[in-house]
Every structure is written in C-alpha cells, then in structure tokens.
Amino acid sequence: MPCLDFPAMENEPVVQVTGLVKRYGTKTAVNGLDLVVRAGAVTAVLGPNGAGKTTTIETCEGYRRPDAGIVRVLGLDPVADADRLRPRIGVMLQSGGVYSGARAAEMLRHMAKLHAHPLDVDALIERLGLGDCGRTSYRRLSGGQQQRLSLAMAVVGRPELLFLDEPTAGLDPQARRATWELVRELRADGVSVVLTTHFMDEAEALADDVAIIDAGRVIARGTPEELCRGGAENTLRFTGRPGLDLGSLVKALPDGSGAAEPLAGTYRITGSVDPQLLATVTSWCAQHGVMPEGISVERHTLEDVFLELTGKELRA
Amino acid sequence: MSAGTYTPRPGAAPLPRMIAAQTALETRMLLRNGEQLLLTVIIPALLLVLFSAVDIVDTGAGASVDFLAPGVLALAVMSTAFTGQAIATGFERRYGVLKRLGASPLPRWALMTAKTLSVLVTEVLQIVLLTVIAFALGWSPHGNPLAVLLLLVLGTAAFSGLGLLMAGTLKAEATLAAANLVFLLLLVGGGVIVPLDKFPDAVRSALELLPVSALSEGLRDVLQHGAPMPWGHAAILVVWAVLGLGAAARFFRWE
Image (cartoon, rainbow over all chains, first blue to last red; front, side):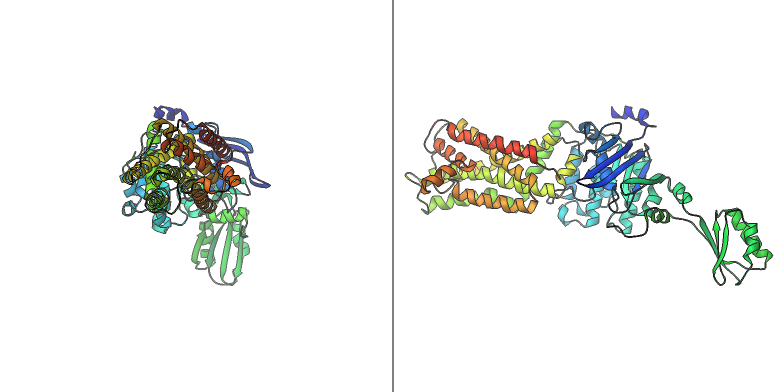
C-alpha cells in the first residue's frame, strides 16, 4: 500500500526545514536554518565540527523538539507524527545503537523483524562484507565493522528516506568506497538520502545537492558544480622564459582576467579559465616564441570553497 | 544484489510481532550476560542451599528452608526486576541502544512492555529453579498460590519502577555501583535471610517499609504460615510501585 503514495510525493521535497532554531541552555546550536531535500536525491550536509549538522539531522529524525521554526519530513511533523514517520525512515547514528552483547547478524535480524518488508538479511551482510563477523558480538567488532553494521541497520527496513550521520567516519579507503557504492545503489533504486560529512571528496563524489552549514546556518547551497563555479576564480599556470611582457597578454585576455609572474619564469593567469582563454594564452605564447611548459588548470574543489566560506582557523 | 533491491517498501511489522521479537532479544541479552546470571541465579540458589544446610542464622522454629525459601524468592524478584534491569537499561542508554530503537518502528511503550515481559520470563525461570531446589531441601509451602502470584507481580512492579528510575537518571557506571550496593544492603536488611526481629525495634519498623521486606515478609506469611492475603505488605508494595513507576515515567531520559 505505501507504494501508492510515491507518485504524489515525487516532486515534493522529502525534508523541508524552515527557520529552525535549537538551543541547549544558553548555547544556540542551530540558528535560523533552512534546508530542502529533494526526493530521490543524495543531499550532503557539510560543515565544521559544532556547526549544527547533527542537531539538524536529529531534529528531522524526531529526537529534538525545535525551539522555533518548522520541520517537515515526508510531510509529517517528526515529533507529533513520530509513530507514522519512523517506519518510513532509516537512521544511522554517529555511534553506538547496538547492545554490547548482541552479535552483528543477530542485531540486524532483529531490526529486520521490526519492519514489514525487510531486505534479505544474509544478502545484506554479504553485501557489506560482514559475513565473517556475523557471530561476533558488537563490542568485539572493529570500528569500521561497527559502522557498516549501523549502516545495514538503517537500510534493512527498506526506507524511503535515509539519514546517515557521518557514515564513513573511521573507515579505511576500501570500506569507504564500498559505502559510497551502496549509497549510489540506494539512490538508483529511488531512496532519498541525507548525509552529513566532513569529507569534501565524499560530498563531491556522492551528492546531488550540498548544503554548507556554519554556526547553525546554511551559508551556501547548490550542486557541487555550482558551488565550485561560484567560488573564487580559477587559475592557469605555466613556466617559460623569464621576463615576458605581460601587458600585451592582458590586452588579449577577456576583461577581469589577470596575469602575473610571481617567480621568475613562472606565470599565473587568473580569470574565468575556459577553452577559449587557454587558446588565447597558447597563441600569444606562439607569437612570442615561448614554449609554455607544465601548463596546468587548477580547478576549485569543494574543499577550497568550504575553507573560503568557513575560514581556515581550527574549530573547537 | 540486483537493481531494485532497495526500492522503498517501508512499513512497521505488526505490533505483537515487534513486541515478541524485542522480548526474545532482551531475554537473550540477559541470559547471555555472566554477571547478570551470577546475580539472578547463582547467588539466590547458593544462599538457599547454604543457609538451609548450615545453621548460620537462627531462623526461628521449624525447618530453616521454610523461612528461607520465601525470602530467596523475594531476592530473586529484586535481582531481576531491580538490579539486573537497572544495570542493563543504564548501559543500553549509555550505548545509544534506547536512542536507536527510538528511531525504529517500535513505539516506546512497546519497548517498555517487552522489557517487562523479559523480566517476567526470567522470573519464571528463577522461580522454577529455586522451587525445585527448595523442595529438594525439604520445603513444605502452604497458602493460596494466587496470593503468592499477586505479591510477586506487585513486587516486580515496585522494583521495576525503582530500577528504571535509576537507569534513566544516573550515569551507567553510577547505576552499576548503586544497584549492586542496594542489592547487598537489602539482602542483609530486607528480611531475606536474616529475620527482621533480630534488629532493634526502631530499626525494624523502618526496615519493614522497604519493598524487599514487604515482599519477603508477605510471601513468608502466606507460604510459611498459610495466612490469607497479607494486605498490609501488599499496600506497601503498591505505594512503592506507584512512586517508582511514576517518577521513572516523569524523569527517565532516553539519551
């Protein structure tokens, strides 16, 4: 029966947060945050430690009552409609959540029993590489195995919407890639995913939409491409004979571009670096009998954008 | 796994199935835990055998097993409903188990129902074992089994309320220490193996108000002396149950 609900849901956001405020005592963790999560998309919530990522996610999961603002998840109020919402979402907490004496497979099988149409538990265990530790008690699993079990517990009930709080924290590169692969498969099958992460490459690799949070607010949002484009200008570098006359080069370049020789023989062109600009530079070099060596275009990564927006100093 | 494996098909399992699964899991966790078994099975059984066989404490007229068996049954109820439940629930809270289950389709009331059922299943196992041992030691119980059942249920309610209050408000380590200390103190001062009339009168009238004293004395009235339903002891247990469960419902923190 719930399947019949999906066509109507298709174009509505699965999460809509408007003006969320959450305080703990005198500390304001979330301060007027807006967030929209599209159905069927992977949305990454990025931010430094203490930015309010977990508080936001946990408010969507129904753990926290907002001090102000409106939170709607699948059209429901996560606190008032908890009993109707919880069967439809999958939750991966940042840590814990398992009886210390429970075996991995036992706990996953138990979560499956709480749902009407769960996934095949044995296949999921295989898929996540937990086959060897099915009979190992939770406290004896490695950190990475505990993370993967927690992910399996979030997925096993076949949810419409998944909340993953730092799903790859503490994983080795192989396990991280395996988790990414699973998230991609979930998305391909129509599951909406909200994940928080510190890792820029993770957001770039997985997310359709990114929201960057700092000090309890969203300070930037968009697709990874939009965010990278919207950041500072890109740079083209090459080396050649020192002391070239850059005046004529700047005249040939579009307005707003710049050229400099920060080190003798090392040239840096800034501006909107596109194929046309690259052609202009190389033909100018040809006219001046210069062989541009080591020519490179530096693309801005989400990490550059992130550091530019949130500052480079360390956070508590 | 092929395409379409994860196509959403959400839904909660039927409530009875969820509660049965949760009860089975809670009971397995309890029976798998060595420290819990020491508290709930080995200590009560040892006390029953030791104090019946060796005349360490003067238990009054009649076979000492007739005095000891009701007290040890009260101790068994306390060890499971109070001490064991407090420690297990305290650590479940600490390790985020309660939090995680709170995001599952299992409603909170259903989780508490499952915990209660798991306590009752464990108590049945304890009572069967202790009864067999007591009969082997020559126990001859009297009285109305329904009165015994009612006292056991009221005692379970009183101890559960106090155990959950402790688990839901204190840190897990503090719960572990306090629950064991209370177990030890009530074992000595709650009429379990030492008759309350060994204490001075003023102390005795205070000790009689303790839940474990009310349960052990109530069970003794019925099982040893064949008395009808001991309403005074039952009333004390009801007051503890109302206070404990009420405070637990009010102050319990899930995280």
